[in-house]
Image (cartoon, rainbow, N blue to C red; front, side, top):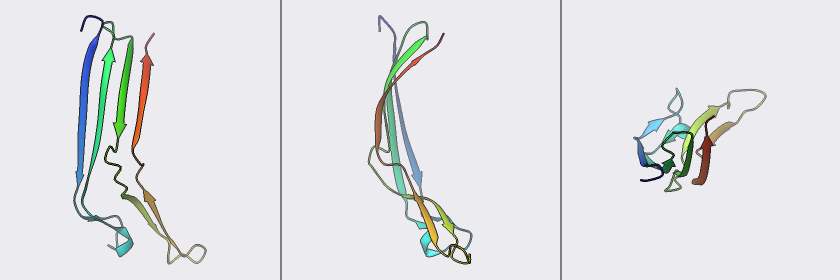
Length: 97
């Protein structure tokens, strides 16, 4: 383009059925899933600035990312499950000097 460079980026992350715990506990089981991310960016010819629009987890798939099995702990006695970030979209402006 006359005033800069336009770029496109896409990503598909696939994970098959798996367990997030050493003991393969039911709480740590995850099914297979695909996460989609994308970005469109416009950068100046001198590479001093970049304006981009991005989207992460575009299908808004919520999956388990971590499992902390503390059921055998006297103090806590629970299982904690961390979930993925929901769909996130935004605009970024970056500059270099």
